[in-house]
Length: 298
Image 1 (cartoon, rainbow, N blue to C red):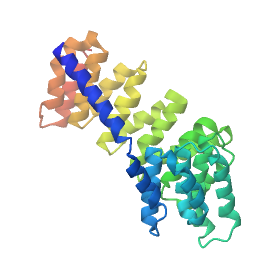
Image 2: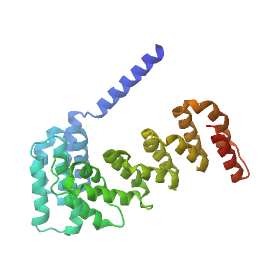
Image 3: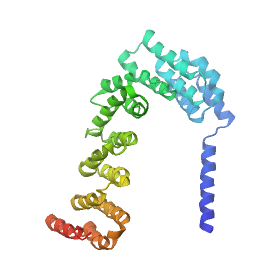
Image 4: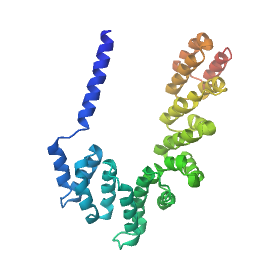
């Protein structure tokens, strides 16, 4: 009972701490609002970020009075702040902003401003408007062979909500997934595909679990995608991976999952698993022979 009380108190303390971290004093609110009048762009940017983070509704009038006087590359931050405080005409202002970027003379090239147009399109997405989704793919093309993160993170929404560009979004995600130079984004691409299509991309997860050079990604592919699906071939697949996996950490994870998922094989498994994982054999062939003999009893 004592442990339960301690846990409950800890949860309450965390909740209270989080609550206070999300609130500001009136003085702090006025400080951030006042910073919108600064001549320094970094001050205004920092203020806008905090107005958005803390949803400072008192900033509404100042935001509206300042937005069109600032640089176009900063105006998107005003729109994000207005969206955060639930200003009812944010959608309309975002459309006005997009018109401004394409119709008014700019010191920036249209190619450069494409990034800001897509950020504005992301706001439209939040209001269920996907009419300008094509711009996301234009931005992806602009930066290839590099991956534009602004555009990448919008592919998930397009996949879920925009039938017109669903197939194109899927193709782009598969390109990311199969590109060895885009390690950081591969797991996210696989997750987006799984969220939409489920086990249709099971084989892609298996390829990652078996062939990816990154140890972390092999583990995630196994524990987040392959094992939770509990396919009919999972028993034999885990045996195969235990036999062929070179990393001890992953072999341990496979062994642990196998013993949990297939308790009928547990008694035999716990006999050979420690040897498979920890025993240092001078011959890889000897290790494989040992594992194959052990697995034959399961």
